[in-house]
Length: 264
Length: 300
Image 1 (cartoon, helix red, strand yellow):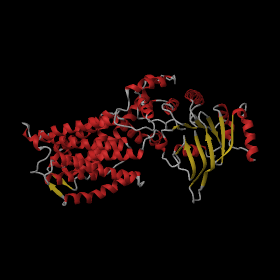
Image 2 (cartoon, rainbow over the protein chains, first blue to last red):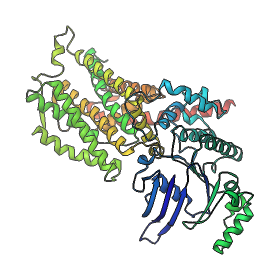
Image 3 (tube, chains in turn yellow, blue):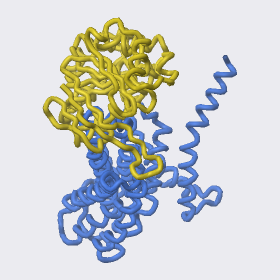
Image 4 (cartoon, rainbow over the protein chains, first blue to last red):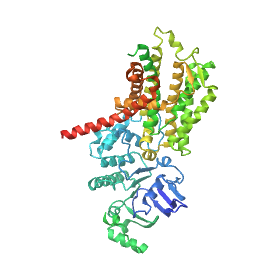
């Protein structure tokens, strides 16, 4: 379970560019939930994810993961509970390292690293088996450099790496946005498969309202650093993008003008 | 042409600079941390070893102390960067400048002669070998040990975490790697190797001098880049081998340039030649690639 309460964060405080990114934002994600997060540019989606991961520190509020207060912990001390896939397909892996070295890094996520050999023979079967599920033939290319793979392949491996060891929450930051439509569909399908198979608690930020409603078990919409609505279960079933928009207008009394949200 | 003595001398110095190149490989290549501390940690290693040796300390112990001193210097640079957020290049320049005073303090004077002292080379002099071959033999052994240890380390869990820190710090943090600690450890190991090189250099040359560090960074970089031009560093082992090969080639090239007497090159032209060699080593691989690209385009 992950609970964020009353998060406040302002960028550039006291400068002319002062920008309140999170304004008293609260969200609790229960064990096994797959939450999709939607919102227009500047709504605070990425900031919220970065705050959960520890890449930015909130000004006030509390972040609790599995009863552990993580509000003030740096990223690397949260990594044993928080797994993450970035938007940039090149960001989640090291291109200069081989596929097996990248997986070896991920299998020790959040654990002590010693002086024993990083790539271990006993991990090989697990690496091959999980790579085989991608059906990209990567299981035979373990010693190839990551940089030889395409963006989509690298994003698929990033996803695999994030799910190689158990986590309390998986953060997906628009992880299909930088891919071509076909690859994006592949990575999204893979995401749903991995999340349901491993029953991962997941928070997925997306730019597409359609995707936000089709995938996952619950949808949260952010606007100006706050949760404007939060729907799950029966209320969410059969909901269309149009319904979502009118719901938003009712709540806020404003029309959504972000083309990205409407068109994608 | 090059005499046998000059040849061995070039290899001997090349092996020492190979250790410097190992250090520079860790900072510049693995950690992506441009570290100029080496211009200070090289004479620091020499100063620590020399002062301890003339005080009667066992030369191996003195050399170990030089490694430790180098590591501390590296850690200071890294902490200036990691904790105080000073730009890495500037942090290393600050440490380098500070070390000039520190080295003078350690030695108590600008230089220390070691000619009649017992050094790590002394026990080897009983071997039935020409005097100029002994340092090459001993330094080869030290280089092999350092290379194997570094290679194993870079393949270890911690070493892999260090490589990820330099290559993709955001990803490294997300994997739970304390990137700051990795930078401190890596820059410390790097300067420990340079301290070792300084200690060995002082013992083989018979003196430690406070100015002996000037330009070590450039020579180390020349070795690293030159080596990479000869051996493409597709793996850690190849990258480390490239350091040694590059350093030896560099010293041989310098020795040839100074001995061959062609184009009227003299000893004072050393730094100019170094700069030209480094420039060539940096530029040539790029030229080679663009020529190759042009050729394949024409064929297509």
